[in-house]
Amino acid sequence: MHLLNKIYLQPGLHMLLTGLGMIAGCACGQKSDDERLRPHYLEFSTSAELHAFFAYRQDAAPIISGHRGTIEGGMPENSIAGMEYVLAHTPAIFEIDPRLTKDSMIVVLHDATLDRTTNGTGNVADYTWQELKKLRLKDREGRITPYRISTLAEMIQWARGKTVLNLDKKDVPLAMTADIIRRYHADAFVMVTVHNAEDAKFFYDDNPQRMFSAFVTTPAALLAYERVGIPTSQMIAYIGPEIKASNQALYRVLHSKGIRCMISAAPKYDKMETVEERAKAYRQIREDGATVLESDLPTEVAEALQN
Image (cartoon, rainbow, N blue to C red; front, side):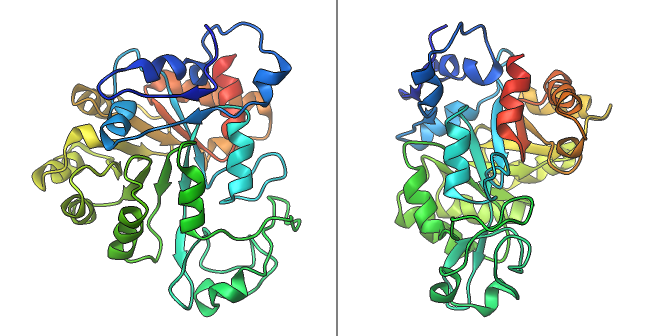
């Protein structure tokens, strides 16, 4: 199969899944040095294309989601540089963490405090954006990098034509999140994580074309989303961080409605000691039935699935 370095989508077609074969590691042949260096972009023009991309099919290739971007390659989490690093290796979407500054600027940082991920100290909410932009991000070992904190607006503008951003819920009010997606006309490539049906309904009422990453750990949770009118064609389901027997019943329900299921390797499997152990776990997640695999180590996941 010829590798597609940029995936262009047409409404209603599933040609995108052909391009995503490289995520699953289909037999792609040898890659030239030039091909290895080219970014693997995902480009969407409409919300309908985004919905089609995430639709579950029995032969669906897995989608890799970089949890907080990545922590690989000496890159700091929640950074544009980290996401660019991943896209140089594999197509991927990215879960990121918007937070509010003292002056109500939305920045992208996971923790409520600065100490772990930057060379600053104290609470994010106690600093203005002008103060925070002077800081530098740390890598996974705590080393200071050249990279600075990004605003959500900067990240959205960067992501257009390259990838999909999945906005987790931290301390940003739902209305502010909806407003910035709308302001940047970003519903074709920005989705929102929702932990309950009430939050999903707010975002759906704001824009009935919005795409969701929904916490669905039981059939009852799915029913709650359906009762408030969330179309199953506009969600993926986060079912938890583990492979377990009870997943199978949930897969059957969700797959019957065309919903992809996501397992996050970040809390457990990413922390395994060796590359080989992690690779085995990533392949087992896929074999379990998940077709979205979230990880702090997305390029490792791509390599594991390819091999």
